[in-house]
Image (tube, rainbow, N blue to C red; front, side, top):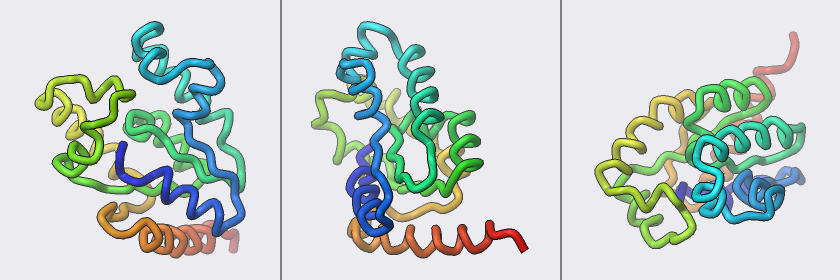
Length: 162
């Protein structure tokens, strides 16, 4: 969350002529509900299960998919994403994450106490670190997109059959 996934994803999709999809937007469109309403009316467990279902449904070749922070920290989802494509982790430290995100009213998890939010952040990092490649999210979106593209091209070369 707040690491630049959507901005960078759109740049990559445009550069590669791929389709860009934001999982949270896809969920809102499919359920005709805002994320915060899904959390309050259906619960976080429902949301997480549906989020994984949507990820599996939309994961097709020539797509750039921006996941929510919780989906990237879900081991099942991480394993699935790594088995079907290149996974980039846009790394941002907690203090900067909080500064970028604290004003967002539509993110239910941001309503938690700061210490709980920090613990959640810390608990997600080990799974995020399983991505194919980590990228420093403090660079410009264009620079990050170029770095991701270079690693993606190498990933594709490495995956070619001999």
